[in-house]
Image (cartoon, rainbow, N blue to C red; front, side, top):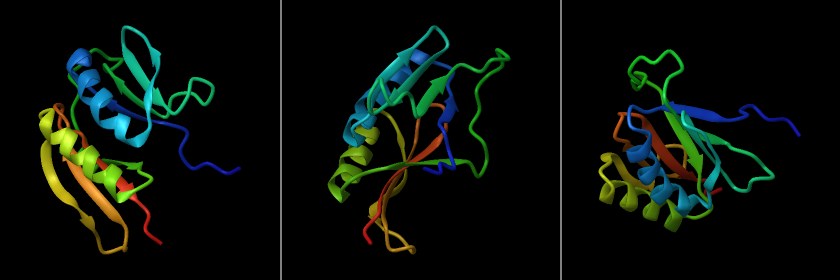
Length: 127
């Protein structure tokens, strides 16, 4: 099987706050904590499959910053999962970057920015 991306990492300045946020929203995408250290938390579908998405304190001990033009798209199985992801994110302090709905490619997205400014979207392929 070909894979273009092995995993994704986003920086955080507050691992505890970020973990509460991502615990809540990633549950709607069927992801849970599968790897935990002092520096990062990895989320995946199962421990056997490994972590696919990490929140991490930067290795260089500098402040984490969100990249301009950088966005992470996470797969959702249904439009309802996108809706729940977006709603839960806003309830947990995210900034709305685009309400759930169809976009120009014909798929269904919901966009947010987390507490550290990282732009995250949940995407459901409709075709």
